[in-house]
Length: 132
Image 1 (spheres, rainbow, N blue to C red):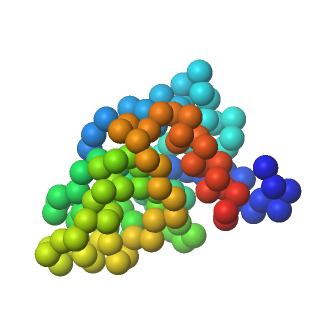
Image 2 (cartoon, rainbow, N blue to C red; image 1 turned 180 degrees about the vertical axis):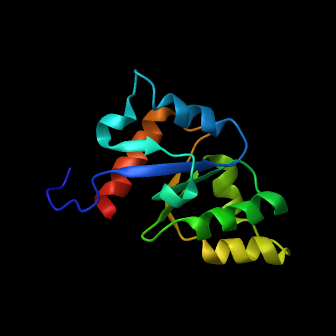
């Protein structure tokens, strides 16, 4: 990692529905142990640095995502994790709420896959740490 690294740890908040969450949770276990890189999962958006958006989007989920995003303190980063989240981030929509979400959310990194493996998640988080 770079010696000019400013951010040396991340608290992540995982949102959404779907199988991607299981792969992220697997990265916290003894095989991958993501905590060795200073990355931990939090249950509270107020203490999160990174919002992980995974799963499909619907109006209720988008409304909740906007609430979570607004509750996070600055600086904050957003990751689109998995095929569903990435495809939804680029899909055209007639829905004003979803368009508001897309304008407000500035995805810092995209992690492709269905679902992405824990190794891909760890790699993405380390790249994000280098960027900030």
